[in-house]
Length: 296
Image 1 (cartoon, helix red, strand yellow):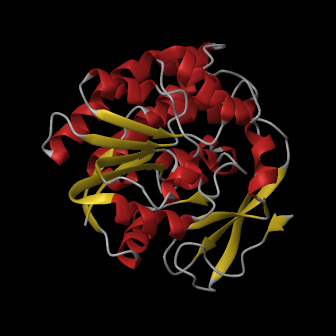
Image 2 (spheres, helix red, strand yellow):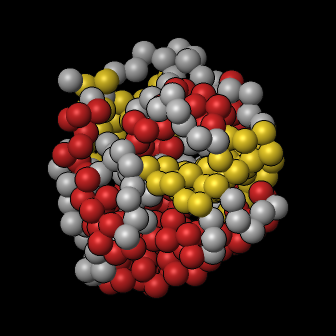
């Protein structure tokens, strides 16, 4: 079963058009169409498999958030940078919640590296992760007992000082149901942190259909700052601030270069990542990935 949208999954407008086709370079080699809403500017993958069928598109040793693999140069560099970004994420949460400890929920926790950092800092951490292999890796690596994502809608759900989705919202089938539930379980004084790729960045324009952050069909949506703002308004949430993720432009450019040329042309990729960040210095909403900090 394939899901075909007749209206924008973000704002429900019917003014949608095809903008490009992109290949799944990670698992299947299949090509998927990407469409855009001319009202809210969200992009989305058209003709995606249903939720159960989509699971097979995550079954790859190269899918790093589940396997935690260090195989290959790009994945090794990812792990090197991750040590630094994990500390940055902890500091960001503490800054905007104004708490040094509290209750945190991480959705799409992967192999648990981030939650482990938060637990070490004294936070009461809960993690949700759909992939069984990733949950097993989290248990083996960090002793974390992650739960399946269905627990988000448990009637007895707790409330949280901080809720984080690090490159997760673009994977969620039930977009509006998730947003509604996130608002419900976020404490009135709490903060929600959503990090997603930003297709309006320079590196997306350079690589076009080879831009790795399209990551079809696993990425169901491809957000712009305008579309995120519209989504939050629909659910009565407030955008407090936007923060750039400077390392992402380099990582995405390295993968994109490999997809486009079949080679690890690190110098060319690094240059495109550098130019992308330089342009984002003038307008942070043009960074390759963005963190949206959200409150009630």
